[in-house]
Length: 479
Image 1 (spheres, helix red, strand yellow):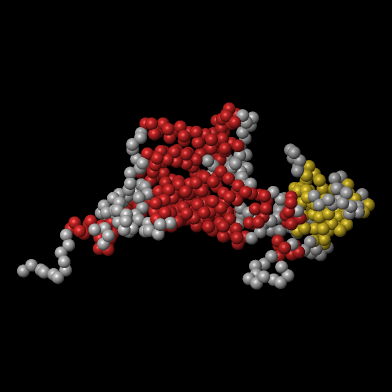
Image 2 (image 1 turned 90 degrees about the vertical axis):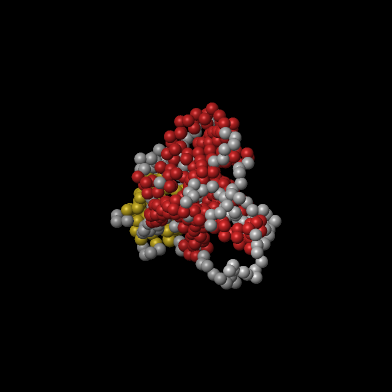
């Protein structure tokens, strides 16, 4: 006897066509997770979308240009590839700067382009300089020209094909390059080495003598917790990009981070504007395939829908293997740069010398005669600063500051100072020092060929607001 039920009979057609009924929405979701072709869009006025939409001509042209431009940028611009090499970078000791090996190889060609196109007489590569040197602008010009010409030729030869598999590999490559760069810069702030605490000579420098770059560096470096938080945001963005499932959140965070960094670089004259600007553009590039979903969620109050962004791995196993490989790459990069950052931190914080501090000159005798503290006398010193190893700073009576190289032999109670000459340091002074208590110092020796005796008192560093500021929830009444 056939089974009977009081529930109304519903046809197969009504189960799949009635997109406005709750039952159909549930059915659509069920078939999607079962691997079916139906992908339900929750908005009731939006029809079902079967598979990813075909690329229009503009999308194909935009992909070709982005593939050539950003692909060449990541391959040829300094740092991006070398950072992914991780621990191998330490073995490239034969190069002055292992991150610029591509530019060193292309240097003759870039110098030729600089002379022929821009009329530059010299296009040097300063490995210790920033990334906004003329040679890097010439490199970007060459990349742009090749990308424009390559896009035009590519479009003429192939106007119909889509490149989803190639795009999948391309987006993975760009994402990993951006992730590695974010780990590099983020660790430099998370372990505060990129912007160290203001040097002692900074406390004696008038604010008007600072460049905008000095202002930014000291503003960040004066608060190491603040610098560490900036670095944590960049490191988090890199971590999220190394994990495929969190790539969208990582790209959004990196976009915000790099937008802020790019604005600061532009406004304060930091010499890595091209790098920060391109990192911002590449984070936007990573978000481009998800633009429709982001607009639905952020602006239209609709469900995001299913991602159709290209990805080169399609089976469950290949996705797991690829995700594991990308996470291991992130570990490889981070574990390589964490020890380097720690070593750099230790270099910036060596044991203090016995004469560390700011010293005020209380007595100055030259050739057996007391030298009065006249502001017109540029040979007499007002203060002497010992801070960074290998360097000292003396302040003249007119308050001008002069940096000199210094050698301090604590065991022999000996100090040697050298002027920074054009070719090699020139001897300036040789002293034997004697400490009279913790806050009094006596220097005896020669200065500019004259016998001198200088007595000094240590300055209490806590009198400077930059050195004695403490966090307080309640604002003090005397502020």
